[in-house]
Image (cartoon, one colour):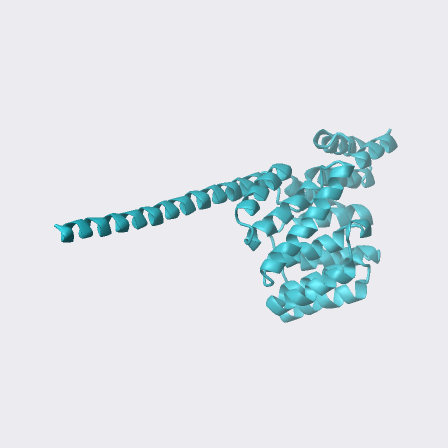
Length: 302
């Protein structure tokens, strides 16, 4: 009888411990599901360009998983995305949070290349008052090189390009082509350097190379049209390439289509086709009603 009682007592203790373990595991699973739900919702908002909503969702994910470097990276990226349409006062908050969250991601995972690349781009693009710094961007480039040599060199070249140290940037891009480590953006960036030198013929040649080597990279087509309009060269081909850009699905990170219509208008104006130019400027304004460049161009036509 005592043996049975003891056995029953031990069984109850075992079941109690098992129940606690199962309950704990279920709680962890539920917590993880909530965390993932917040993160997935943030990604969904981010992909839709709803950056302030993405920020809120990623903030929830970070609260639920404060040691996840990837969550901080996405939160920082969403902060940057939110800057575009933010008010003057909101911009300061989003900018500060962007830098802080990216630094936190790197602190948690020093080899998080995407976080370092995004932070470097922030340093390149942001004004000094918001923490922009070419020297800090170069520091990130050096760290990126230890993990991914090509991406590190690409950031270094981008710093020189934005700092108007064109010879240094050009040499790095030429080296990439020579070494076979170039990517779709290299010919475009070389064309930017040529434009800065008013060498529109060379700029067009780089655009042609971009279209030849990377036919799916729409920036090559847009840039061709831009160079054609600025340099008043190869205008008919410029029209062809801009129309292809306009008719193609928009690729994130490239100029919005109102700019393509504006460039098209500029080419038609150079060809002394005012009706076509007027239509192109008006199409640009249909997309972006406060597009000042198109407004000014229409006034000149009148």
